[in-house]
Length: 113
Image 1 (tube, rainbow, N blue to C red):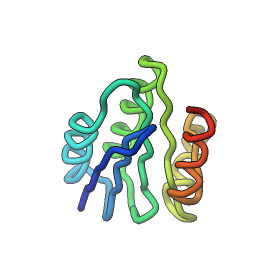
Image 2: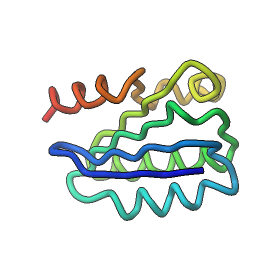
Image 3: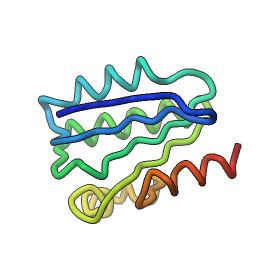
């Protein structure tokens, strides 16, 4: 798994390439910890993640809870496939804000900033 991150004017962006599983989840968690500052607005680009297990899903939920406690906003960028399906079957689609592209996520956060 490859994880890249950078700051933009109104948010932090973390891009994940590869499987979000028990092996990669600690790396993503560490990258997010280093990237997040106040205010906590995060775009998590999962559009290149073909697989996510329960450990990876746990990281996503933990990040969402942390950002909500700090009154920030989390947007997941997802492509059709496993991630949206996983969110739907676990009923987490009601809790996560998703978009289909990084550009749409930037626009959404820019409009709210």
